Amino acid sequence: MIYSKKEGFRCVGDVVVYDEKGREFYSFYPSQRVFYFNLPKGQYRIEGDVKKLGGFLPFYRKIKLPILDKPRQPNNYKVIYEEGKGLGMIDHGKRIIYLSHTLKKNRAKKDFVLAHENGHRFYNSEAKCDIFAIHAMLKNGYNASQILAASDGLTRGNERQKLVFNTLLENFKN
Ligand SMILES: [Zn+2]
Image (cartoon, rainbow, N blue to C red; front, side, top):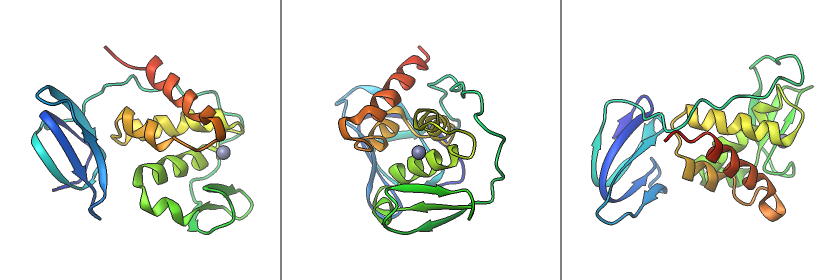
């Protein structure tokens, strides 16, 4: 299925969602339970008893973004895949965001790192850029579990993932 915008789904029992390259994109195994999830726009193959809801499910409050650290930079950065600059790096002088080739294997992680680097257009601190990335990922239809997985292993001791976890928890809507 191709979805041209983010969508919400109702599912009974286990679900596995594959991306356009056949890689697992999202899965959940609640046995017989009914649950709901969102998907960002894209092309998917879904295995499970799933019904599209015709709308996006707002599980989360819109994350409140921190006050900008610097004047808003224009959104005209080129994205280039190149090694030797960590997972992601932004060069404000050249207006380039560098991403590691390793991110091509994991769309959620790529989107998280790209959103984080975009965050550096407004913020200096890593924490604020991560909050910016969470905001962007939720807005684009990612689920909390995917965002958490995307932030796994970014730092030794997973300090950044702890912040992602706490931010998601604080903003969950019951
Ligand atoms: Zn950063």
